Length: 302
Image (tube, rainbow, N blue to C red; front, side, top):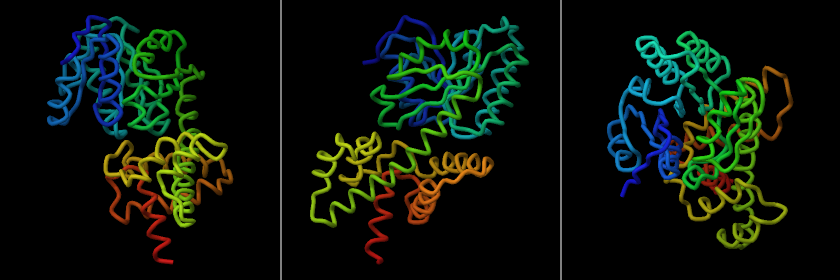
């Protein structure tokens, strides 16, 4: 049964793997959540989990001063910002009365363009990407890297606490994305190293489940080993918490940033062909834990 929240109204735009969990957890935390999603099937699914669901971002203007965006592409972000700006201008809302917290992993130049567009309509935007998988989002095991105007971040902090485990204010606009790129570089490496270690253990004659249980909390473990190790051991990558085709976008952003800085990245660079092979082998819609299947196939071919 849906909880009847009577607290602060919050808008969540984009109810995909991450957004749906954020919205549901906010509703459970006592917020009055209005979700926006273009997919009719997803809207129907979410209608029993949050206060209200709609198809247009325009419906949020004048209904809430706090909006979270979790979007799959630059095109989606710009379309949403254009809708919000147009409606805010039409309604003549007070400058600074609406804050948009952008949680997607997208190129910084595009987030800056979105912020500029919203600012013309008097809407404040902060850059606040998240660290964590879809599975972690379900259990509020997310970290928020908020960056931008300090006052706006403070106004969003209670909202962040409604769906996340840890929240950091990391400075000027854009620092959030920089932190996210650092975190995702490690995620990319640790995910592949987890698959490599489990396959190694199995070839030594150990059971995958036992490897995960014994190694995860030791010196050789990592957060990705704890999160993705069980999925690899059970071959459960069909239930995606981060689809490989979406992860390719994140990988490209990191790779572009490394190249622009002319930095050596031997471990990250070694991961790139593994994820590309996963795409080629039909795992585009599977969780990134499917890199285990890629290494397994490589081993069989050799």
